Image (cartoon, rainbow, N blue to C red; front, side, top):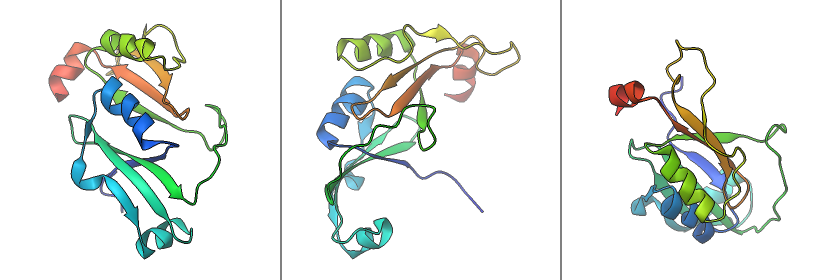
Length: 159
């Protein structure tokens, strides 16, 4: 039934603050055609909230995968803390080409690093990610972003 994941949507408190993380720190590009201010009956139908008004920024990785950053202008709700590991929490894993450059960028920009410093992925040698590195960071709203640098042979095969 499923064909592909079109995008991952994340509700954020501020599109502008989220862009500082996803675009300016992690280097994702903004897909302008899918970004902007949105309202109308179709959104109210989709979300179940009357008079829904969103600010959206669609950020994109080099391979074309997308994350939709959604700021609810109306209705405006308070953030509820959900810790990693709690039911209802989730994370996104983003592959990077230079783990240590990304680690320095998130550290320099003051984002909360969950696992400090990057570590080799502790998997058996037969795993496709054996020899790679990973760490986790929280975005401005506390979403867990796992960053993974696969080993060179994996990157060479799939890039």
